[in-house]
Amino acid sequence: MSIGILVVDDQPLVRSAVRMVVAETDDLVIVGEAETGEEAVRLTGELKPDVVLMDLRMPGMGGVEATRRITGQSPETHVLVLTTFDEDDHVFGALQAGAAGFLVKDMPLDDILDAVRTVAHGNGLLAPSVTRRLIRHFVGTRTAPAVPRRQLTGITEREREVLTLVGRGLSNAEIADELLLSHTTVKTYVTRLLSKLGTRDRVHLVIAAYEAGLVTVA
Image 1 (cartoon, rainbow, N blue to C red):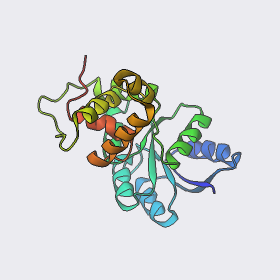
Image 2: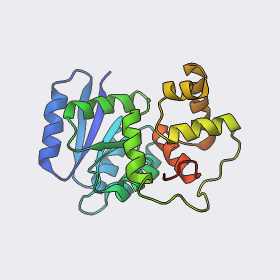
Image 3: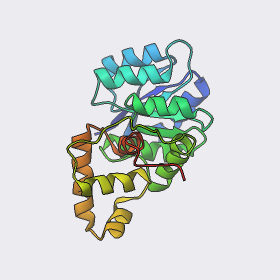
């Protein structure tokens, strides 16, 4: 069964490039294209895409607000933000609005499509190296809050340790080595954290770790 993609970007060249690459795949299909945030919200409701590739800066409604509305009305749809690293505040806002992750526009298109597949199948989007870049750009540029913005209630001390390491960008395998646990046990802890903290994916666990003050700037 094909993965349906809605491409949202006000630049026709970007939409065309994605369309051409997707046309060469067997498991992906473009179900629609939008030039504005308003159009993206409407088409998501009508077309029910599996994944929305979302630009941030567009005329009218921006990508952050469009992401918030889409994830609110269509929780089964995953939003991947298309960005550049000079838009840190906007990207952080999009992640807080419910985006599954972010992609850099100058990434190879094949890598972007691989990320679409990863998210569509319910797996975490960000590889550990990308998570570390996320932390550097969204956390490393900010001073850790004096008073944590998120209170961690109902999690165990071990879960707190796992969350801290997730926030530092470690993979499950690296966390297992750090805490002398099995990979399966770490995966179980991560799943519990997602449920207890009400987070959609690993990206938002990173944000939760930052907001709770577990990730600090060196």
